Length: 277
Image (tube, rainbow, N blue to C red; front, side, top):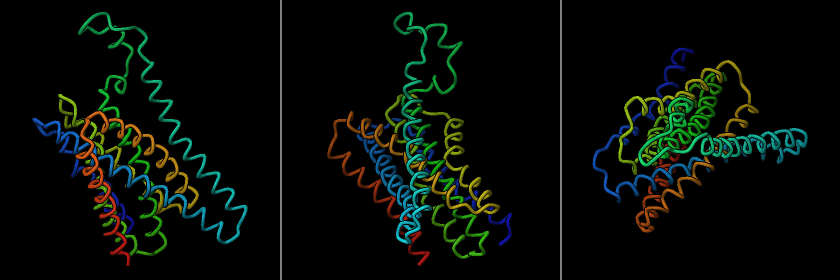
C-alpha cells in the first residue's frame, strides 16, 4: 500500500463521523427522543473514555511489567500530565466562557451591545452547541491517537493491521457523530449544516493528521500523550452529559439509552478485535 493510499483510507476512517451528524437536523423531536439521544451520546462517550484510558495506560504498564523503572516513570508522568491538561484545560476554559460577559443584559429579550462587539464565535454558541464543540474536540484528540496507530502500522510494514485499523476505526467513528449531536437534541433551533460540518472536521479530521504523522514518525510517547489528553477532555464532557441527562427526569429511559450507547461503542470495538484476530 502506497503512502497516498494509506492517507486516503485514513481520511475515510476519520470522516465516517459524518454518518451520524445529520441526526442533529431532525425536526419535531419529542422530549423522550431528546432524552434518549442525549443518553445514547453519553453511553458512547463513556465507552470512548474507557477505550482512550486503556490505550494510554497499556504502554505504561508494559514498562512496569518489564521492570524498566526509568521508562515507566517517564511514561507515567506523561500520562498523568496529559490527563490533567485534558481535564483541567476544559474546566478553566468553560469557566472563562461563563464569566466572559463584561456587561449584563440590558433588559428582557435584549442583549447588551458588547455581546455583539466583544464576544467571539464560541462565546455566542448555545449551551448545547458549546457542549457539542467540547465533545468534538475530545473525540478529535482521541481520533488523532487512532490515526497515529494507522500510520505507524503502515510505516512498519504491517499493512494487514493497518487495513484492519482503518476498517475498525471507520465503523467506530460512525457512532461518534451521534455523540456530538446528542446535547443539541434538546434545543429548539436546529444546528446549521455548516456547524455540523465543522464539528465533523474537528472530530474526524485528526484521524487523517494522525495517519500523516504516524507514517513519518513513530513515537509511542506521543501516542500516550494524546490518548491521555483525550481521556481527560472526554471525562469532562461525560460529567456535563450526565447533568444533561439528569434534567430530563426520565431515569428508566435514560438508563436503557445509556446502556445502548455503551453497547454500540463496545460493539464497534469488538468488530475491530474480531477482524484483527
